Structure formats: C-alpha cells, structure tokens
Amino acid sequence: MFINVHSNTVSWLQATKKAEIRAVSVNEAMIPAIMNHVKLVTLEGDELIGTRGSDSFICVGVKGEMWMQSRDSLFEKYTKGKYSRSTGLTQMIPKSGNVVNTLQVTKEWCDHQRTPITGDKFCLSALWGEMTPDGKFTQTGTIGDWVCQNTQFPDDVWIVDDDIFHASYVLVN
Image (cartoon, rainbow, N blue to C red; front, side, top):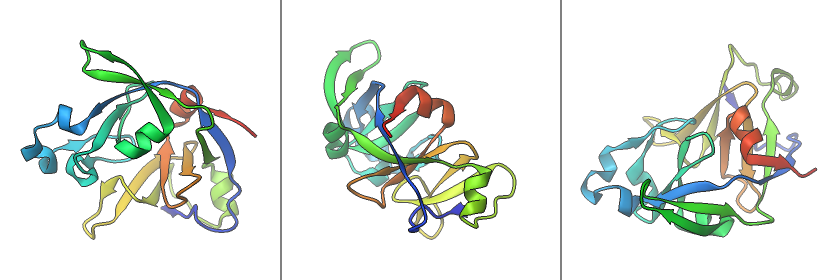
C-alpha cells in the first residue's frame, strides 16, 4: 500500500546523520557500456545504475546497505576522508548540520493518515528507487522503518530500515 508523506498533516521530526559511510564513483566501479544493464540491490528496491548518471556515487552504509547518490548531494552532506585500496572505497564523514526531516512509519501513523496497510509492507513514490513499468520510481519498506526527507528538496524522500536509522542518525528534536 502506498503512503503519502507529502500531505499537510504529516508531522516531521528532524534528525542528523552521525555515521560515516563509504563511497565509490560509478565511473570507477563500472564499465560505462554496462551501466544501463546492471541493477544495484538496495533496501528500497533494485535501481538501474545508469539512471543516476555517470557522476553518481555508490554509497555503502553502516550495515553494508548500498544506495546511489549524486556527486553534488554526496559532497554537500559529507567530507571526503581516507581512500582504502583494499576495498576501493573512500571514507565519507558527515558534515555537521546535515539535517533531514524524518518520521517512523507505524500502524498507528498509517491509521492516523487514513492509509490502510495490509500486512507489514508499505510503498512510497519517490524520485529514485525501483523503476515501475510506467517509468516512475517506488521504494518499499516495512512498518517500523523510517522515511527521511531532504529539507531543501521535499520531493526527495527515502526509506531507512529501523536498525540502520538508529545506527546512522540521531534525532535532534
């Protein structure tokens, strides 16, 4: 079932990233000729690597989870750290003030939003994620996961697993 996080009735909390990540540019990780044929398996859904452009980065989080991010977005939120020859990844350190809006998707929240949920899964329309046959993007989460929203670009939303959220973010309000 799809949830709507863009309504006026959503009450966001704020969180900041506390955990370092690792990253590699798509150009360094992939042969350009195959980018449009390879999917990155992410928690939110499989994403075709070529959909983000050749200036994108593959990011690896605290629990080994992977996602893609544009170069501009990555360097806006993180400072480049040490490069590891053994992994081929660069340490990325969160910048202070890297605040996102967030909310935890619970059964009660869905009921309050008048969004009936069957089972424990929910979907979210997003700017990225798994591409549907109509060319739109969706992400899939489990009740208890968190939805984060870019404070500067409200249409940029993503799902974070509950365990990963607590290992990666700290609530600031």
